[in-house]
Image (cartoon, rainbow, N blue to C red):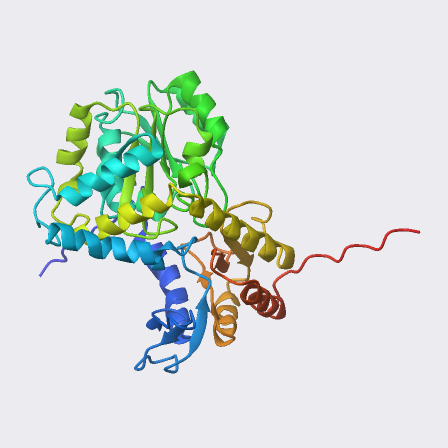
Length: 425
């Protein structure tokens, strides 16, 4: 029997052998140390998470405070948000229609889109997840159906979240795709000078800290007609008037050259995602709805999720949102005063405490055993050699909790601020 032909991949846009081969060793090590695959429930009386019985590496009943939760304003447990979901089910008396929205839509989702549209001053299309929205939108940008009809050069930022980076091979079937150095404005401008149309894909708020150069990108948008696709999930609600997020707070380009996708599962405190659009016609919105892949499948936001979203949107219209934002910022400032990081000094709620690849998992376990959970991040989440513990700050964390966590981080080798020198007398 002759040998059968083996396939050699091109790996032009992704390399699973590398991602799985290197990254899975870190995940296995994390699981063996009991800091991955944790099952726990919230004790509403204490605000602590308690592990469930039956876990292989974690004793049942271990209590800890979650410092790796993206609900930065703690709205996911807000009584009005919980009641909003229940109220919507009572009003509409159906969980879902279980059919593509291009055929039959649940009224609750249309109600939520209208509310979010008024809140952010834009047209909003909802999706079950930001990654689902990205999967539907980026191929339509690549083919020119979102934009001005010209197939653009698609520039993916080197550190674009995997939910966007995974679309490189799909977009490459429609147009030319390249990867740029992180926030390299010169790279983007050179491309704009060369190509009739350019689209840049990046995070508006990075999952490992920091914001995109929104104002500088707006200048390129005005000068060359650059289209920018932002995932601004980590700043929605936590930043800006009415919680509109970093991008819409800073970008003057509010037309069809700017597309913003934001999850509702983080600081907004509910479920799903919002696609925020300006200047698109009803015809184009129907193209998105009908040809945006999973945006039109039957797994859409259900009635309870929409009701919770409506309640959260109402909180965003009140002074309570500003109060929650300020409490979050105070907690961020407190952490910065105790543990210096590259993200210090910003309102961004994520801090990355550097660790070596060889110590990051052990450090994460030590923190967990002390009663706190922070996420060890490693390749391919971050480049090799840049591992660390990712700390998420929230409005509901107490000063005492933050100080205790920082004391543990200092004990395992996290840098601490240099003492203020005594004045010369």
